[in-house]
Amino acid sequence: MTVAAPPSDRRLGGLMRLAPMLGPYLGRVIGAIAALVVAAASVLIIGVAMRRVVDHGFSGDEGQFIDLYFAALMGVVALLAAATFARFYLVTWLGERIVADMRQKVFSHLLDLSPVFFETAKTGEVLSRLTTDTELIQTVVGSSASVALRNLLLFLGGSAMLAVTSPKLAGLSLLIVPAVVVPIVVLGRRVRALSRASQDSVAGISAYAGETLGAIQTVQAFTHEGIDRKSFGATVEGAFGVALKRIRARAWLTAIVILFVFGAVDMVLWIGGRDVFEGRMSAGELAAFVFYAVVVAGALGALSEVWGELQRASGAAERLFELLDTRPAVRAPERPVALPHPANGEIVFEAVEFRYPARPKDVALDAVALRIRSGENVALVGPSGAGKSTIFNLLLRYHDPSAGRILVDGVDIAAASPIDLRSRFAIVAQEPTIFAASARENIRYGRPGATDAEVRRAAEAAACGFLDRLPEGYDTFLGERGVRLSGGQRQRLAIARAVLRDPAILLLDEATSALDAESERKVQLALEHLMKGRTTLVIAHRLATVLKADRIVVLDKGRVVATGSHAELMREDGLYARLARLQFDQGGGRPRAVGD
Image 1 (cartoon, rainbow, N blue to C red):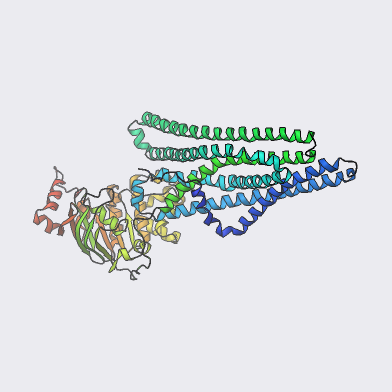
Image 2 (cartoon, one colour; image 1 turned 180 degrees about the horizontal axis):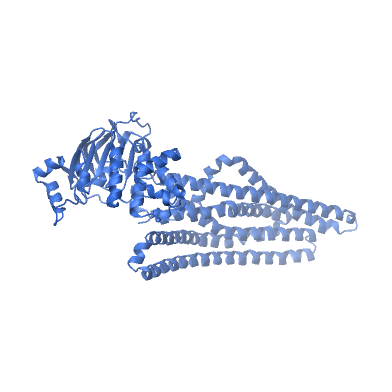
């Protein structure tokens, strides 16, 4: 599912929303505008100088001033060059700065969005907005916007000078304006809609490629390469088709504007030439008028072309602001209640109910009441879909309960700061996340300020002796998702990360499931040491884990159906006993696992 997109019924609304971001750089904005005005004025002054040279510089009476006229003209050209330099530098600087700020703002906002957003949004499409769309904005803000403003000033100033130079010819020129404006408006709307569609299709390409390459082993294992090539090719061709329609619309827009504008110039020159021939107008006036007409026509043609770029950038800005306008499903309270320090690690579920937004009809937790004492080791057991992982998700406040409340150290977590709350937890997932960084950076992820010695102690506690055998030791780059490590090594690295974090509450999703027997024994010893004095919740699959728990909580269909020790639950002969018996080895009777 993609991020929802509103209909593109606005013109430059997306770009207008960028205006507040210029506030911190007001001095440079003023400088850029001043440079634009000076550059445009310099161009217009050239017409005045041209008129003086034609009418007076070549006459017998003022011929001695011809050197002065051309020297003054050269001065205007130099001023134009200096103003153009300042305009280009300042406007390009602003474009780069705004895009850098936008990227940081969007990325920072994405980090605050709850996992609910990423359950429905394609990560590849979001990344496309963060990269491709911001690059488009940079091009426009740092270049096209400057060109548009410059040509707008030239159009307005040139039109005024046309009226001053020859009101008659200027009036005739105005007759062509409606013929130029109509195609700009009509085709401009189509260009805007096609630009948005083109950007969406490019995002689709990125999303498809990201998903496929991210699962390359599965793709190759199921020999799905041919199908993926065909699907990707169809996606690319679809994007090309949309882009072709946009290009065709822009080409028609530019061609029509040029035809009407320069056709009008030709007509006006014909009339002006006859006026000079009949003495109703001087040659200098006609030369100046021609100059201004070319300036106005060129400015109008450039505006029609830049208009399409502005439309594309507006669409890109709209897509970025859609992300910024997305509100987190879980929000920090305006005045968060501080959690007590030092942390105790006590957890209380009070009649908690929850349904996942994507499955509103299915009850994930149903009136769950549970108290976990400080320092207690509790195992969560139950079949698939019983609600074990949901308890973890609610504790970390990835979601809020539909009813009831959850207390950590006596504070309702909905009233606490999510940052403060999550700082009390460390989680080791069944499939750990390893970042494309060094082993040292991966272990230090949960406590960035840890020293190298602390990192090494945590690694040793998690049986990560294999790190010393890597090519560069702890500084070895592990590859994307830790592809250079085995499954067991990745698991131990994640455990080392949790050891280093030294949390009040430890969440383990069967953290030893991917380990061989020898490594499991080492890690179990490390975990037993780590669990001392802190609250631990374990999603248990192996009976060895269950047997070492202080208490076992059995879940089924989102409800707590039994609580007790292994022996007590076996005597009750309920769901727990049935799961345990189902997972005994047939041969030797050795218990393998409990739950899914």
